[in-house]
Structures are given as structure tokens and as C-alpha cells.
Length: 185
Length: 149
View 1 (cartoon, chains in turn blue, orange):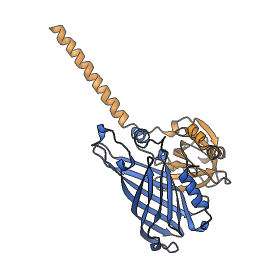
View 2: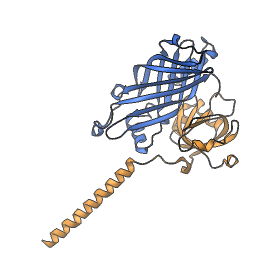
View 3: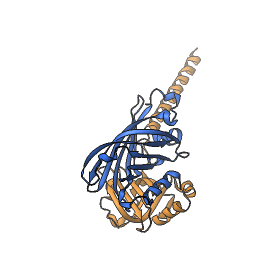
View 4: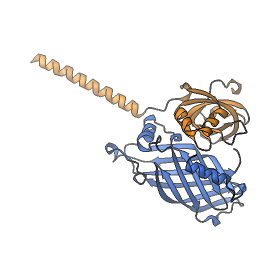
């Protein structure tokens, strides 16, 4: 079992907190977008797995790089083979926490804006990311939304020199995670 | 002199033809869409339970065997979650902790509008690997779902 998946497993089944404190999504939506002179790059997946611990504010998510779908086949091939090297680095992960957890009342429907910080691992490189996020609470479920930019060079994602000036060096990542009480889907 | 001019014209025409062909190939390659899963022949036909168990038992071996391959999986639609443009079906036997997560995209998500929770179904898609569940993307209903139509 890989470390992050093991970590998710521990978070799901850990003995330190009750199951009712944990919310889970197994079909989290993750997309990224980059505007470039040559072309815009956009892809998404609805297969991200994430666990949120309401008591501690701990959040983890994991996504398979190969689950991202593009409109153009060539773009998807370059993404997997040249940029993200998905055979070598099959998963991207995040492990962090809600910094101001006290702002969220999980028992009261509403929209809460918080700050999330943690370690984002892409292409085998780990960097600290801090981003605003909103949690919309509705009948016990929590809808988490966040958007943030990453710089490709931070994650050692190399753009071929031929198209270096035509592809954006930053990518916007958007997460839309519909958490539900921990149970089988 | 005439002979040289003719040779040059032939060369020019050949060069132009080659340039056009290369351009057309480049353009079509650049804009090539992902193949439609409907027309892709499955490399494997599996029961969801067996598919999941293979990843649980030996993930590396299952990755090598199934990732990027077209798989047809039969199982029970344990859960169905839809948005306006996508749908996800969780296939399992109701006993396993894991499922086969089948992601339907914009082009195919309406295919499962009549699928009911608890119904048996066969879904074809491309295997992306395993997290807590086996993940399949670009899914479509496989052709042997006559009971749903």
C-alpha cells in the first residue's frame, strides 16, 4: 500500500477519532487550466479521493494522474509521457489541514471561508501550499471548493524549449469536493 | 535549359505536395480527439469483485496488467452520482470495501440516466489505476446492457 493511500486508510480507520468526525469523497472533481499563446490546456477528473476530519481539520486527497481527461489526445499523451511522467509518478497528493477550523460550524448549514495549508506532491516533488477555501455545509455534507496556482518549475515539470514561450508557466488547479459522512458510497 | 526548368518545376511540386501533406498530418495529429470508447475492443472482460481483488492482492501486478487498457466490467451499480455534465457509477458486490469507480464524461453521462441503484450493469472504460477504488475513465455502457434500453 502506497504511503498516501496508507495515510488515507489510517485517517479513515484511525482509532483516535470517531468515524462520525470524518467526511469522505471518492469522486472528487479536480481540474486544471492553463492559458498559453500556443494553446490553452485544460483537463479534469472526477475520481479524486479525499478525507476531511471535522474534529482536527486534517485534509488529505489523492488523485491518479492518468485519470485526467483532455479534449485532445496528443495533449493527454504529452501530459502523461513528457510532463507529469505518470508511469513514474502515478499519483498526486495533498496532505494538510484547515488553519482556522473554528470558523466552520459543521452542524449549521452555511458557507464558510477558511485557509487550508499543506504539502502538495506532484511529479514526485513536494511543496507547501496555502490557499483560501470555502466549505458549504448542507445537511451534514460539506462541499469544499478551492482554487490556487502552481508554478510548473516548482514541481520540476519541464516544458520543451521549442514551446517554452508559448505555454504558460503556471497552472490553475480547482478542486470541488463533495464530502459525505464516512460510509460506503 | 528547358529540361532544367521542368526538373525544377517537378521538384517544386513535390516539395509543395510534401509540405502540404506534412502540414495536414500535423494539423490532424494536433487536433486528434481521444478515441471513442464505444468502438474500443476490451482487452479484458471481468467481474467487478475479481477486478478489485486483483488490485487489493498485488497492486503493482494489476497496474502492469490493466492500466491504460480498455476493460469491460460487470457488477452491481452500488451507487450512482450525477452532475449536469458527468456521472460516476460505483460497481461492487456490496460486500467489498472498495469499488470500481466508473467516470462517465460529457459525451456519455446520459447513457446511464435509466440505470438504477442495485441493478447489474456492464461498463467499458479505460483503467487509470487504484486508490481506494479501481478507477476507470471515459466510461460507456457496454453493448450487452439490453436490459437497460
